[in-house]
Amino acid sequence: MKIFIDSADIAEIREAAEMGVIDGVTTNPSLVAKTGRSLDAVIAEICEVVDGPISAEVLATDTEGILREGRKLAAMHENIVVKVPLIADGIKAVKVFAGEGIKTNVTLCFSAPQGLLAAKAGATYISPFLGRMDDVGSEGLDLIGQLVNIYGNYAFETEVLAASIRHPMHLVHCAEMGADVATIPHKVILQLLKHPLTDIGLARFLEDAKKIPE
Ligand code: E4P
Image (tube, rainbow, N blue to C red):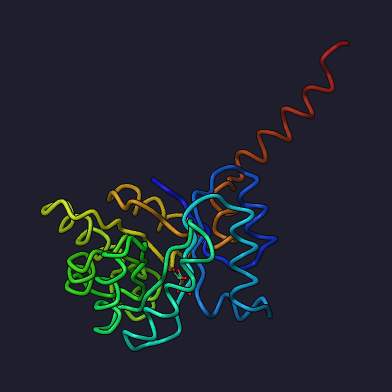
C-alpha cells in the first residue's frame, strides 16, 4: 500500500519524508491557502522534497480551463498529478489528459457511479473522501470497498486513493479492503506510530538498563 501525505506545509512534508514512509503528496486549494504562498511556489518546493506523485489541483471548472491549468501544472515537473474535480467537465478533461499521458487524480468522489465514470475516462487515481462521508452520516469505508471491488471486476488501472482520512483505524480498514493508496494528514501520520505500551515499555527498558554493570 502506498502512503501519501495530505499537506501543503513544507515542514510537515519534509518531516514525514525523512521517516522514509511517504510515497507521494496530495494538496488541495484549502491546504495551499493555509501556507499563504502561491500554488506554483508550494508545488515546486514539494517536488524538491518528495520524489513521487504530487497532486496539484486545478481551479477551473470548465473543460478548456481545466485542460489549460492542468497542462501548465503537468509541465512543472514529471511527478505532477493533475487533480480534477469529479464533475462532467472534469471527466471530459480527464479523458483528454489520459490521451496526452498526463496523470490525473479525480477528487471529491462520494459515490460508486462517480468512481466508475472516472475510471472509464482513464483517471490515474480516484479520491473517495472517507471522513467527509462519515461527517454526514454515510459510511465512507463502504465506498472504498465498492470501488476496489468494481475496479477489480473489470481490471481498471485507476488506483483507489483513500482521502479525507481522519484517524489510524481509517487507514487500517482501507488497507484491509485493498485501497491502493491512502493520503494522510501529518497529525494522523504521527498518531499511527503512537502506542502507550511502546512508551511505557521503552521507559522501563531504559530505566533497567542503568542497572546493567559496565
Ligand atoms: C484529498 O486529496 C484531500 O486533500 C483531503 O484528503 C481532504 O481531506 P479533509 O476532508 O480532511 O479536508
